[in-house]
Image 1 (spheres, rainbow, N blue to C red):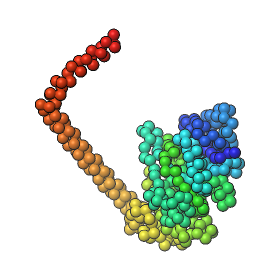
Image 2: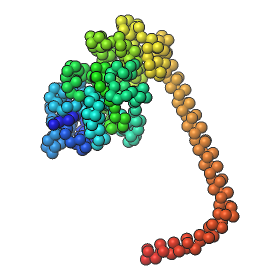
Image 3: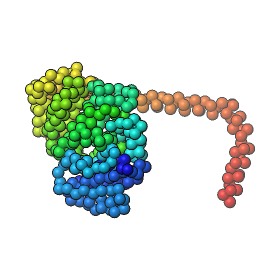
Image 4: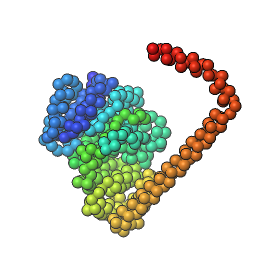
Length: 390
């Protein structure tokens, strides 16, 4: 029986692909189906896929003309046979026990969804860092819990990425949940619907996945090219929640999650034109949309996002908002440096104190007498060492 179908979209990632595939092939859970969809790669990615398929029958290669990650994942889900669906990005890698631990937790709790935590590997620094953990409000829930148990945090998890959880395939098919078929932000709708509709959710509170940044190949790195897609994603989420009759119950959750997503998108833009465009679209959304025009800062549970929203509402133009955010970032940086300098000063004082105490001990008659009494033993030890070397 195939326990987990692992779905991996592949497009021009030959530099990182081998590490990704090795991490899946070496999973401690062996009952896997590994569906790699070559989305029209023009580099050496396809040759690497063929190599793994030739040596491991669990690999299944699908070839398509280039579209987008959403369409690729939908195509793979249609042919998947596993009890659960798992996802990976082709430039990331997994801990060896990822699918064993999550599958076992899923079976223990009879869960539709099992989420887990991850860290970040920065390609530019060569360091694994930045572990991402669950909110304490979620950790405190009795497991398994339902979508309604999460309250305002239902649609505001620590990660919208599909690789941050495994999902029961029968549940996805029954609810008709798919990815949006667009260039980026195609995973927001899928993840929100999964989290909003699941009857049983559970967690593995361990870092089991590494998300690679700084490559220029992932979708976040290309945010500036299609920044407005984030609005399409949240519009689709809003409409689907309304169609299913659960928008009112999840209104604060949608307000919290979408605002965080909008401000994150704004913060990643390096092009002035794109920044102004997103700001203008946000302004229009919060002034004219039937749902979003009613959102206030009090509807937003995340305190950092709430403050950003309040700042946004009181600024008249994108430049004012940008300068306000930069001033706050500079103040935060100044505070962090002051705290680091304070910590350094404390450590220096502690070191000097220990040095003084050590000098005092070495100057004492008791220490000198002890050294004298142990002198014959030290001589004997050194003699034995020299004899062994000969």
